[in-house]
Length: 375
Image (cartoon, rainbow, N blue to C red; front, side):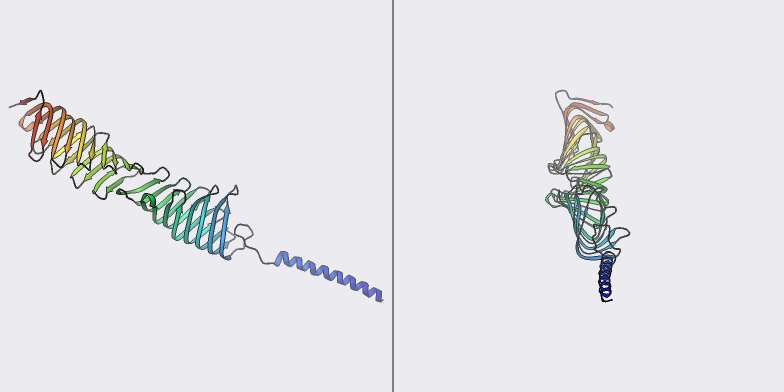
């Protein structure tokens, strides 16, 4: 009987140990606390973490982003993390693309998208372009960055700033398109551009628009409007096309053309197509096939079927080329000159004509000057 009791005791001991092991294994598998990782699928709905680093990778295993946050609340059902006090670095093909900060945001693991809001600031690392906005959304797989509300883009080394309401960009190619009340300002030389949509191709150093545009040279108050335009930042040249209107309030000169190239540094406007220049106070209108306006020297040169009409004498001069010196109020015409005053039935031909706008005189000279006066 004693032997039987010891045997039962051993059996009972073995059964007890097995039972304890089974309960311990069950607790470990089913009842242990969940380990939360925002890069794995076993996250718990509503889990919160403090002072964390979140990372994400693309399909090729290359880093997409590193996000640092003081707090993250994870929603397992949507695989979205709500983050506060955000600072992060974004990548494209494993290469650093942008750095950004914001008061709060969301990280969507399913779509690989990041949204930041509140005092958003970012920098495009390659071109060293600073950005600010009320809200910024980055679709990493499409390489599309969108920003809204008080958007501002700066390139400090080139002293260029753009502001607007909506931004669409491809950070990997450094192409930024701003829309709604867009203003571009440069300090060297001081220029201001306005349009409803302007695109900045930072890598190619150009700003362009297919929408109506207005440009003001701040120092001289020279204004120009056109249907569209392109600014070559390196050359400091703006090319305009469409219905171009230019006005120099200082010189009281208006230009109208369908194409113009404005060299901001040289203060030179080149008109490669037919255009009209006029001055109401001086009573002169000139047309030509092409020409140049030298703003610094206050001089306009015209070539090709030039016609200049003067309200003071009711006369019209036709020539091969004309030079209009605005300060001296003189217009000099050369080549195949004809001068007509229809009200006096006067016609004069010659090689050269000089008109003095102040004295209201026109003098025609040459080897074969012919005057006809029809009674």
